[in-house]
Image (cartoon, rainbow over all chains, first blue to last red; front, side, top):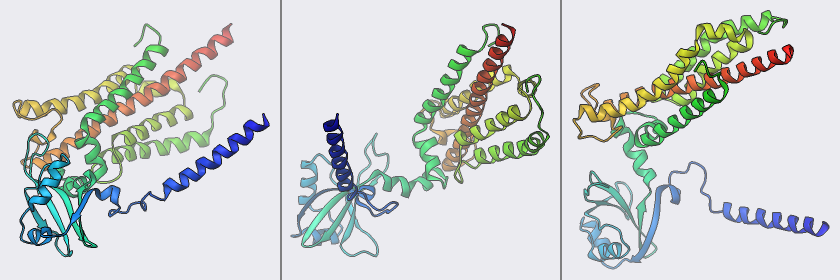
Length: 176
Length: 156
């Protein structure tokens, strides 16, 4: 019994250590620039001619090839982010049914002699386009009732089913 | 209130004053689901809590006169009908071009985005009605069961 307790204590200390180690990676709460919220990094590549091509609003062939090799659509055009040096937005073309319009998709950044290519997280689109698409300022509501409308319909029917079950179990047979 | 239990004037008066405000606040929460923090689920539960407060302060028979069982059962399904019906209206008004629950195609106004906002408001109202009726219904059923058991124990 005593040895079991000692094992449990050691296990819990190890778990605490693991959680502290994992918590190091968690971004600051509510930071919109945090990597998991803003973008997912895909790969880095040598600068070479890429930057000068990007500055001329031309999609470098090397970049397209690298993206296609990894199974991503190649960008249709690139655009410099206003006010920031060495950062570009990559757009992808309209493609039914996943992209009904041209969509901002890649985030290309130059720094430290490398060009890093990231894919924007879905949250970015959610925040930037929600108000324009739905005319509702509350991003929780347009997520709940519009983008995820099916989900909410299911939730409501779950509540309805719970109520009907209680009615069937507890009410007398004669009155429903 | 069961027979033989004392009435509390303070509780009765306070709840009589509070209940209208609780109900008004619930409607406020439902209506402002789009503009601020709020929505159907929260508003429905707040509305149901007004009925629960009434039952605590007065008695079950009194609340059943104001909100009868048949109306409760109808309300609990009507909210879901509103939600599913709004979704179906999108298909009907666009003659099958739009998806289910694509509120933009229901012609409330002339703007696509405004239609989506209004559709969301109506959907929230449907959620609110269902949640309110189901929460109240579960509470009343449990309270009634307890009352019946107590009566049976006293008889036997």
